[in-house]
Image (cartoon, rainbow, N blue to C red; front, side):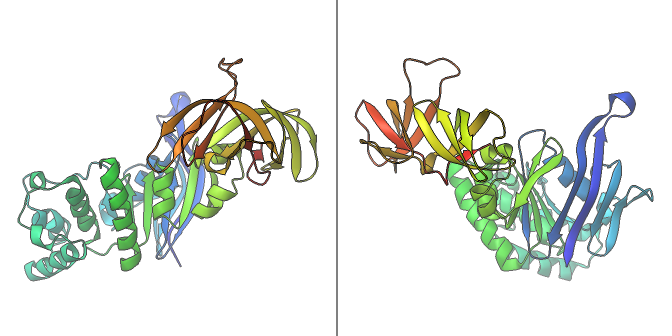
Length: 361
């Protein structure tokens, strides 16, 4: 059963001739126990969609349904206010009351619902325990670490058992190391409690780690949706391929193509690529390959090009090697990156681009 259903949602900022369309017919479903990530670049509409579901933005048309209740219906001029939608919302800034203790921050929504004191205490104690915050109930937000503040915000959103929890870039305020730990904690918590969650993020690694399904937005529309593995391994469009993962982009000329593959001329040689999306129908194409799919060789190998090494950068567990034709170092020159187990000596190398991993758009 769908916990959340959005159908053909349109939303503009402004009105009349100056109206700026933000959502352009977005439709999506969130199933019970599912985590869906809204992913996309700044301005793609992902936060606006989340805020529309929460009741913090007013769409122009379409509909929003949570469980069996219609929350918004443009045709019927129906719009349920945010406070009556019973959704859990975790803001990017956490938005904790600085003058209230952890306990009082979490209990705030229950007090607004006029629940009796003993039930509030029991609910708050339970949810703080689930998030490892049971010993921090008497502390104030300024006495907590960033990760602890984040968990308090999540506890506040969960305490009244909402059907859907909305997460607006919940990890963006944490440093890189803590963010990795927090996303593992958040994924484990969501699975353990069987939550239905809609999460906004601009970080594709975060979306893949936490979600069951990704909706990639581009300019107010859903570009592609699917499991993290499908989005990463079989992108339907050039935008999806470039947004998901760390990539090499190579301008190419199509020399020959059939139903599934194309022979491409790229800087450094000719290679065979797999056609993706609508395929490379014209003479010009763009070839995409993930950095980790490029193999480095001292000798000629199948489906490879030859380029000189420009530099190597140490990343801890591997070296990132950059290859560029130094004779053509202008803005249009191709740069190819690959990973190596050790630092490479200066010189030219053969870079194998497996045809199944090299995509032509």
